Length: 563
RNA sequence: UGGGGUAUAGCCAAGUGGUAAGGCAGCGGGUUUUGAUCCCGCCAUUCCCAAGUUCGAACCUUGGUACCCCAGCCA
Image 1 (cartoon, rainbow, N blue to C red):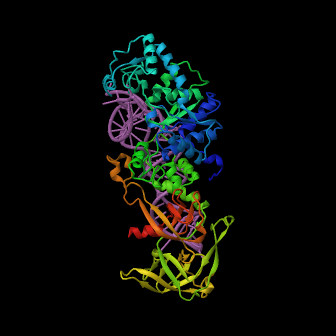
Image 2 (image 1 turned 90 degrees about the horizontal axis):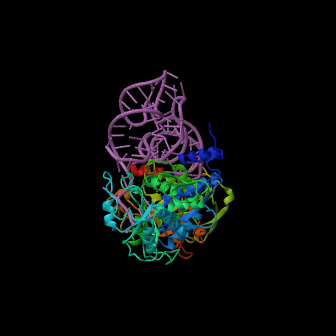
């Protein structure tokens, strides 16, 4: 039984099941989620999964989703990142509720809650060094020891915490710790540091603070302040959930309903990196052309590559949300892009490796204008002109002097159809001193425009072409995966797994004339080749530069390669 | 016996005691002026392993095994 109703397209996953139960039980009446990136890098495909999850849930349950920058570590953050993140979320097609939020909006209140903890005897200023704190923390199998500063009075702690705030301690000389349990089996509960000294200008709060709250203290409180009902994060925070709950249990903030944290597994995509730290290294060390290099699995890179928001959303829908570790195959993503672009991309002809073809029986000064649909299955996308002349370009791969029956393109003495045009027969070819074919001479059959050969013979092969006189010379960037191995993130030295052939620049491709004014933002299908889009940085009307988005599926090439 | 998690096809992933969805990949066939698209068909007698409970188990119980995460004043 097939059911294509929209309801069936809404994903089901364990988080949505929890929400269904919470709604049914009356625990919550309205769902609020949040997408909480730290502005310390550009968003990548893994973030797209989280964005689709959080904003998707809000949309489907008629709730809301906040965009909140988790900006508690000013030394790693920058407004360049907040700007790019906002742009990426919007581009993906989502809108956050109200204004953009920042954890730093809550620094005053956070400070107040820290004081509350101190007053309850649940936090203390520790003057152990970072190294000493690590020693005292114990190991995975051995319990930790109490800091000698653990039993200071609330009054003393308050005074010391104010001193921290007022710049009275150098960095590393004091920190505020929650007093929990140094022998807990959850390492994160062994008196976690919740405030540290950092004489660092903050991109939002400037020089107002020299102490900054830690993630574990900040995130849960920020969620509660914003009335988040379901705080969704990735698996590595599962232990931290105990601290998340502990903090909210011990402060006076009573939101309508206490938020709960749920964890899902992060996305791993074959041949890609989904680590901001490593992506930043590629950018900083010049291995790529910026965060938006089309080979990067960043949202901005994929945008520049020609991926569509719809294809990324569909990808996130298809991969699902679970707690299982996973590595998704590249083909899953590629298929989503092809599915979308196949329906929406205007078609065009572009010859990537030009080979001259002269149609000897076509008058030298004659020029015809052929018409071609912009989409084979969607006439609403209109048509375009295709100038046809005696001299055209075809692709080198589409001509062979001799070939077996499998080869359906142009062979000496055989016929082939010029896409949207005539049938031609190859009569002879010219070669250079290296034996490389430089020109093919053909005869065309005037009666075959939109018709079979006069004798009724069907021509199997169809090849693309452009009029030499009207062709627009262009640069085309071809891409392969940036890495040679399926899981570069797991490599001991990921830089050594970089694919040196990840970029191939074709500097004299020939485009059909209608592509002359092509603007970034539209992805075209170059027929028989793949999807390509104008490069947003380098393409111009004088010098078009196109990036390969993804090739067409190619069963012939695959079969040939398999031989 | 530190603790927290996860095991269903090559890769994702439904499934929640009633007899293994779906997608991607792959394989076969049809249509086609894109070797594309589209269409049709095939692709887990078995759910990490082993015992047990039950008329009936991927789902429950017990015992194993494998893998991931945690010892930042990062998030």
